[in-house]
Image (cartoon, rainbow, N blue to C red):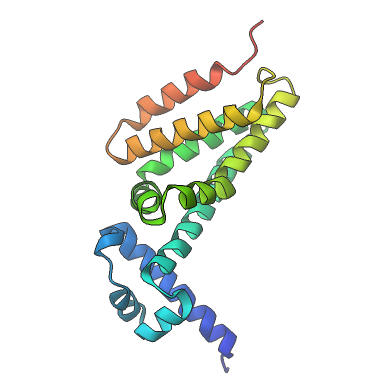
Length: 193
């Protein structure tokens, strides 16, 4: 069976992403050398530059992939529940627990904001997760499950709080304590009777 050029390019890109992710998670961005990623992936340095232009380009692609997977993990945790409030809580808890994942910790929480810069990191975070958080809050408010309030500032507050808590967990903070604090915070969104 012959492999097409497109399939070869896709396989090369996949190998570089896989190896890049492994090295970025294990060693941190500043200790990774693109030529070593290429060698470990079994491709030439030229192929690495062809696909990603630079180490920063490879890192950007890895960040995007890790963010997408984190979003899928959060959605999967939410989908295990039928009740919209429990879906929301489960998704938030799944996001927090991601701080214990070495790839999320090193790549998304520690390196991405400094390597990509705050604005680019925030834009990627907005696309990957904050807009889903806003959608969930809008649906909960529309259903009367949380108190009716402006969703955009609430989204920013919760997103920032959860990012900080995930970073705290990533740096050795108590995940159980963070989850309990998150539950108390979220309970405060419920309408008072």
